[in-house]
Amino acid sequence: MRRNDGGCKSSCVRKTAVLFMLCILAGLFMAGCGSAENRSGKTMIDHAERQTAVEPMEEPAGERAAEPEKVPEAAPGLSAEETDAYEQMALYIQEGFRVYGIEGAYQAYFGPIEGEEKSFFCDILLEGEEELWRERISYTVDEENAWYTFEGQYEPLFSGDSFWMLDEDDSYAADLKENYRYEVRIAGRTDLPAAIHYDSEGGPIEKDIGKEVPFRDMASGYGYYVHPMLYTYQDERLDISITIEYPYISLSDEDLEETVNEVLRDAFFYGYYSDDRLYPEKSMYTLIGRTYSVTREDERYFSVRIYEGNYMRGANHPNEWETGVTIDLQTGKVLHLEDVIGKGRSVKSLLESGVFESLISWENQSTQEWIDELHLREDEPPGEYDSGFYLLEDGIGIITSTGRYYNCLEAKFEDLGMDGI
Image (cartoon, rainbow, N blue to C red; front, side):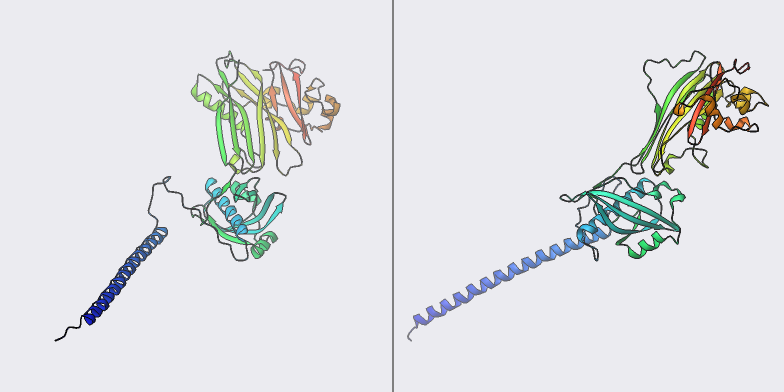
């Protein structure tokens, strides 16, 4: 039988080609399976990341890694830049909630952003449980770096003074709730879903320390020491600056020392209006400076003039005045004016004796002209001046006022026909 070599060769070539094609297809199939495994693995990682985002693991406070910054999405009707500005304002308010210990959640309604040169402003309504607060945020922004700087805020909520709260039917509140541009719920214990990129003013810092007085011996020579103290309360965010210089007296009797210094603090740390104590944390837009001058210092009595200068934003002008306090170092009690001038004697008869001299001359006004403007009453009890007098070594000072002006009038006991104390 004749062999067909050409046919065999042709058949072998075809088989080889088929096998080669099968190998290629098998390789592609295997590569496809590998790609499928890789895609499946990425999906599992993404799923794990989403699970981690939904259910974060507990980490010790202060050791949480910083979250990657998220690009804010524009709210309906707002540009990305506007949305970012509103988010930063909301974050800044939330920071205030945490700094000032504001509890609960508040619905925040933001009005339109207004610009004035390089500064921007926004009116805000914070609505809590039976509370409405009108706030105003101001800021500048570095547009190239999308970095905000907040300063000069109006945030009465953080002072907690109900005087600044709005009524339910207030037109401002109704208008902002109806025409707000951005709305968000803010609470100190709930994080807002945006990254912080701003600088802010500092919160409250309170210090009460001894004041260094160079070249002075604290010893009085009368069995006690007088230490000047310096109290400061600074809050950039609420524009509060309070500085009070006051004396602290060291005595050998610890109980008496405690009593005396409590009396001194009451005299220096007084409040305003209905408050009998100073509460710096409840203030807003306040500048207060208080200091003193010792007018008598001996074994029995310690007497000072207390000066105050203050300015409250919104007031027509700064204010200044003086008060006085005298302490009996044997009893720890405050001395009353009647203890000095005696019962039955009025301040009117005292000042009209013609022997007092004023320390301040307003518009070249004489002492008598000043006294005439006081419109003194004979029936005015001396107790009205218990915080308005001080002792001198050989006399007495009376602090008087008319309108927004005050004056210190001084006289010697001898000239008053008094033995003195």
